Every structure is written in structure tokens, then in C-alpha cells.
Image (spheres, rainbow, N blue to C red):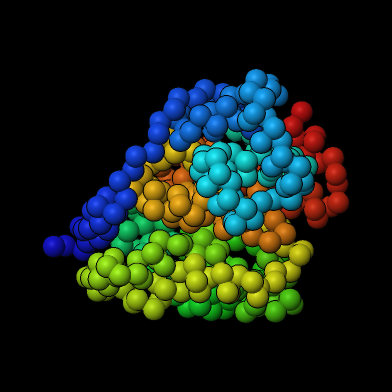
Length: 393
């Protein structure tokens, strides 16, 4: 079997075990509604999720019993973003889709998140403002793309190599580079390599914007939060966290239990991967690491979170989502709450799961996100509160 076909072998074997272990009998209840400025037409996993999306979040109170129960959640939650544990409880009490929508609504309730989401949506709808925003700002920035797991062999399939986003960014006239990290390294290996790269790149007068997806997320977090000192990280002005598995993937932990461990070990051996390096991305190791890290608060951190409902999963996530559903709302690889970095802003990509490359609008979203980050940096740099508001007009 050629190396080109090896990724398919690994995915197919793992998928087979998942299918045998977790028969996805998720209910499919049709919904059609507006949320966060977008139209949602899909299916959800419960009647309460349907009512919450189509009625409660639209301001209609048509079911007294559910209205009281949902209202109690808001009284208990107040302004806080629900924790991983709280979301699991809401999933168990109502449903996973309900908990995902509740998380989205609580993120939207934050004024800063709402502001950045609105600007993002504006850029998607009105592309005429992009040239004006780029005219000067782009010249002062440099984007460093940190690729995902196995990006050399498999990146063209998963998007982990950032090939398409780099073409788009280059087309905008923005300097960008791919950080050629170890292709299947541990979180610590990648963070060490990235730290050395940043120490060199920070000598440039340009503002560095780090962009990383999935497995690159925890490595960027470790580099900025522990390995690089404050002086050396001054060149880093922003980190765009694209669905980073900051607190690991519980799927890896799942496959350390018997009997599924034997399959995990077989696939790792067949692929030529190092098991210990993969375990660095487990929830067990990642959550311990996450708790001790502290990023310079002057660095702008923006999370781009794919938030799928059960009827919106891509072909790569449909078989993995059910295994994580017992732990709460997820994107098919990690729990949604675990994507959020400390002291950050969050943009919600409704309908996307962990594989952003499957989003048919991903190119437009890539450009919008790039312009948004650069605009926010300029606003921060000049302390000009009206910069973004003017761009919307």
C-alpha cells in the first residue's frame, strides 16, 4: 500500500471501530431559524433544542414549562461562559444541540464577542470595504501559519498544510510564511521549534500574526504561554486560534482504554507515528498543561470556533461526533469549550465542524478573518475606537 493511501487506511479502520462501538441513533428533528445573523436550516437532536432555537432565542415564549426550565438556566449562568462541566450537565438534562446553542448564545451575549462577530459578518457581506482596510495596514503585518498534524503527507486532504489560505493571503499582498514544524511531533516538540522561529522572526519590524489550527493550537499556546519570554514575544501581536485542541482531544483518551487500545496501537504502528507524541494531545495531558500557561495579555487572541449542530456534520466528523457527545457539545474532535483560549475573543462559525476545509464558504471566511484581525490590531495600536465602526459604513 502506498503512502498516499495510508491516511485512508487509518481513517477507515478507526471509523469501522467507531461504527461498531457507537451506533448513531441521533434524532433528526427539522429546524429553520435565524441565529447570530445567519439562517440555520438543518436537523437537531431534540424537541427542546428545536423549541430553543426557533422560539425561545427568537423572543417567543410558547411553552410555559420549557420557558421556566430554560429561564432558570439563565438565572444560574448569569453573564459567565459555561464551563465544560456545566455544558455536559446541560447536554444530559436537555440535549447536546441545546447545550451547543446555549454556549453560542452566552458567547454572543458578551459585548466584545458580539462586536467582532458583527464585523466579521459585515466583511462577508460587503467586500467593497476590504481594499480600503488593506491599503496600508497589510504592509505592517506578517502572518506565520503553523500547520496541523501530518501536514506533509496528509495536509492536502485535511487543509492542515494551509496551502489555500496562504494563496489567498498572498493575493491580498500580505507577507506570510509556513512554519515548517516537525510533521508528527509532540506538542512540546512543535512549541520548541516555533519558539526558536519566533525569536528570529521577532527581529522584523512587522507585527507578527500567528495562525494555527487543530494540533497547532496547544503548541502555540505553550510557546507563548511558557517557552518564550516577554521581551522576545513583543513582535507577536496576535494569535488566530482556528479550532485549536487547546485542552486536547478526548478521542485519544478514549482509545487508550481496552479493547479499543489495540486498534489505536496498530494504526500508530502502521503509520509510523510515535505514540508518546500523540498522547501529548490527549485531554489528560493537555488539561494539565493548559492550566499552568499564561499568555501576555497584550497579545490579541481570537478563537475561530466551528460550532456544528448534529445535522451539520461533515463526512469526516459524523462517525467521531457520537463518541464525544456523551461529554457535551463538540466539533467532532474536541469539546467546544476546550477550543476557547484564556483572555480571548471568539467568532462562531455556525455549521462548521473541526474540518474547516469542508466549509463551502471557507475562502471568503479566510479573507474576512484576515482583514478583521489586521483591523483590530490597527485599532489597538492607535487606540482609535472608531476605526472598525467607520469600516462598517
